[in-house]
Length: 556
Ligand SMILES: [Zn+2]
Image (tube, rainbow, N blue to C red):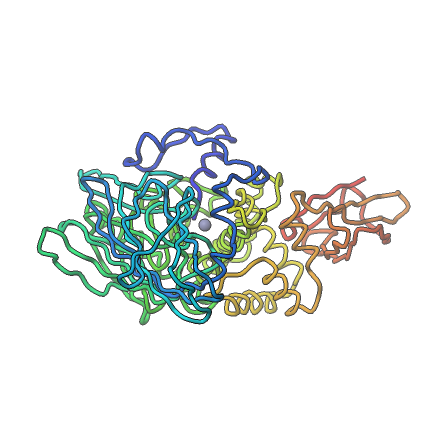
């Protein structure tokens, strides 16, 4: 995801006027949003129900969903079923699923047997008449209907009209959860291996969902069913509907099908702007390896909000211009050289969609890495110097008020530092490694090791420590689990020597850093204890490579 509110907050902080880029957004979303809740606030009961991976979630492993729904644009309603196949990991008689309390459960069936269930806010506990056995696979049909409530930053499920007055219905529900519009096991740890998405809509509309289009069927009642097959694991929130009067054009990158869906009025602009998809895909695969969802293809789909990384079906709302929402997002000119939404949201195919966090607490694995991928794209296309300037231009957006990693099990989305501090941290790690050949192999192997998996920060740290044969844990902990930046303290006593140490929360923090003069750096190895070195430069003349290491410096 990329959060339009971050932009808005930043612009407000700069005292700039805000132009909303998209004419079709409702007045509801034009109001200035309230600041996000502190990640340190106590959880609500709904947060606990949603976030805990308790017995009735952990007793099963998702295998397959077939979401088969009918969407009525006039009534703004949805009806259908999700067929859920899972393997039991323990003997039990109950599993925990999720569906927004405002939607109706019509029936839940095991074969032809109706199942009992109990609802508690957004949770649905499904009870079975006899014990489900560990190791066995089961399939239930969860029938539901109702009118999804529009909510959240990008609408959850939003029934809109385009400028020509045609229906335009989209979903984007990363934070609020996919259960705002369809029943599923709504958490981050467990993903289905594959998924079928069948969407029945009025025959004059097009649905673009995730995966490969298997075909469409005229249902004879004015409706057409669009069938899509996702051939990889997929996060629930990535499952998307994009229903509108789309026009389609296509291209190929080698064997990879590229499909583009936009409103008719924008097709010429799109043909020009979406040409950026190829160099973007080529850049990311040069760093990490093949596009992760080759069998499903790559799609860009116009939507009425900024953008979202829906797997193999990336939502695009950047107005067919470079920058982010028609602005120089990082304020140094580089952002205007490319389309931010194409690069950022597609970068998530590697980090977020292929490599996924197992709890929203560790969402920096999605956003910190993908923001770093922006700078890798800049490095590939415009050079190393621009990449370093680009990374550092994110500094004014960092707050350093709360740790980037939030408490687990309460579905608590981290604050915006996960984007900008996350990428500045990864740039710092590259400087700690201090050998680009090692760095490129390391990040590629990290991606390859964990693609199609749901991981936590501990897995990242373990991998980096093992590969580099050094303990970087205190560095990861200081940047990710503490609010404050490491401070390099330099003390001058006027006798040709300098004392230096790190001031950090992590007592074991030890990180090399480059000081001296730009272009002629000396690497020192401070710890949290004072060390002393001879020095020929004066207090004022000595510089620290703060473009390469995200730290603060105190001279005394
Ligand atoms: Zn993002």
